[in-house]
Amino acid sequence: MSDTIEPVEHPRNYEIPGWSNADAINARDATIREQDAEIERLTTALKIANANHEHFERHWYLRGDEIERLRAVLVAAKGLNAESEEYDFDYGLGRAAPNSYWEELDDAIEAIDAAKEQR
Image 1 (cartoon, helix red, strand yellow):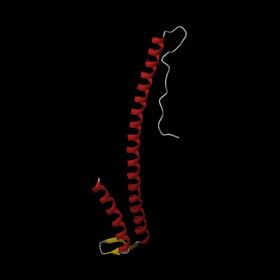
Image 2 (cartoon, rainbow, N blue to C red):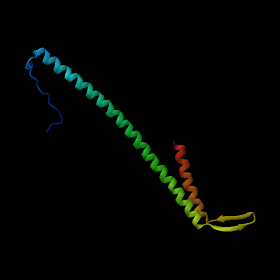
Image 3 (cartoon, one colour):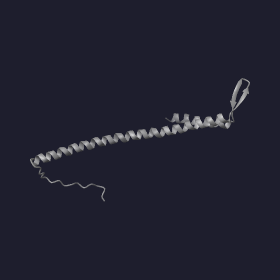
Image 4 (tube, rainbow, N blue to C red):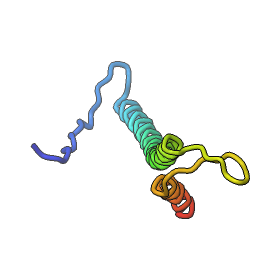
């Protein structure tokens, strides 16, 4: 099967009852012009739709990445909160946790800051 469409030969004599051959040819040419205009309109609409879809898709993936970075901060903060203990410091009550939990939270926040700088 060929990928190209072969042109169709149209007879030069259009016999439409009540129409002259010239009227039939003019009507055919007008129909072709209308169809060409419609093809052009649809092609333009398709180009716009594709551009809008690409824009939406790009932002969708960017938002997904942003959500994952924020989720990492949430997980780190919950871990920090769960492992922290309340202490009575000289200046009042406070909470403390092992450094690894603080570092995990710090890394997650730094990932968000790095992504903001790349924009």
